[in-house]
Image (tube, rainbow, N blue to C red; front, top):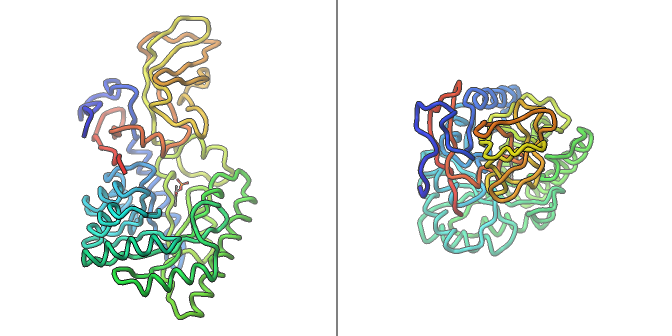
Length: 366
Ligand SMILES: *Cc1c(COP(=O)(O)O)cnc(C)c1O
């Protein structure tokens, strides 16, 4: 790890270096338990594979395993390596791999861990197949279909079945099923819009599984869902694996979504007021290099009288029309978007009742 830990175990949260990311363990564990309860209500059972891109730490992944998960999803090879090395028995890389170097690293993982990887092109299949075969490994392949999100994924139906057939003919690979994640649906505000989007996703899955069945190919897995839509995939009777991520810690971007939100903010960015020149504003030490702004600026936790109004590289501007803030005041921010914010930090401080309980390295790199 390239940077010093931002705190020592047993210290008060007031001693954590800022800007620094903190996870509140009680809230995190409550969120994980809530998801475990939701999933357990469904029969036939659906497998929970929480997405680790949200937190990028093996420790939270293991907490998720203790809360009913059967495996863990990730988005980078570095995350997959960290998860596998830490003993997660099943890892699902919900991404496409083109590089031979990355394919070799994945084949190495697949020798000891059940590893799923997504494909939506013949090139992915040949690169992964060669690496797996040369390493005496088997990689489980999910053919990704575009269910309406417009990101990765082939057209549902014939093309998906063609890639499944090619996978089955390729030494080192095994066709396991479909990846059917609807990225755009997650943040649709109106529940009715999410229902329409996921109904479309279900139809796309059914079109594809019908084609697979016709060709005699077994489709054991249909994976998808995120925090915004998972109740719909859960109820569909078609999805077998759920890969929600944000539910573990939440963020501002999920606040406006119309749903039964049982999940609470567990991820905070601690910041210190470094300048307080008056004139209705103060400056803190958290800026664009401490949080992502793709989903908006952070919100100051528990302080509706302070508004985070502007960010530059290492400065944040706080509007305080009706109050003053002393230099040295510490504040907690709720990030606009949890996942890319975590990716900017080397450590997450795990705290309970204001005391540092653990220090977790973030799985950075690719
Ligand atoms: C981000 C992502 C998820 C998790 O979505 P959340 O909205 O964070 O719950 C699941 N699957 C894939 C492929 C993703 O990219």
